[in-house]
Length: 111
Image 1 (tube, one colour):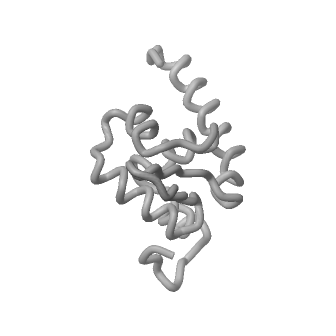
Image 2: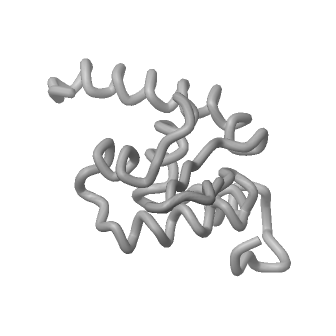
């Protein structure tokens, strides 16, 4: 696992270490829709830099949330897929999406 603390005060701290931040939930959301190449993820999240996307993908791979498959060809082909741990977050992500839609509708925020 990637630089995770050895001890947490509660499971929420661990969860936030694993999926917290600006990008990981968005990456997981898109990978739950199916396997993607780096360029596809970058296109879906245009405001992330390539360096940051690489960092986030590596961390999530190290934390067993996603897998990375490299195909032995030229040019190299790499695909990212969700693991069982990553996909187990889908219901939570769906609920977060519903909550965001409700909030936006009640506060006149255009999505």
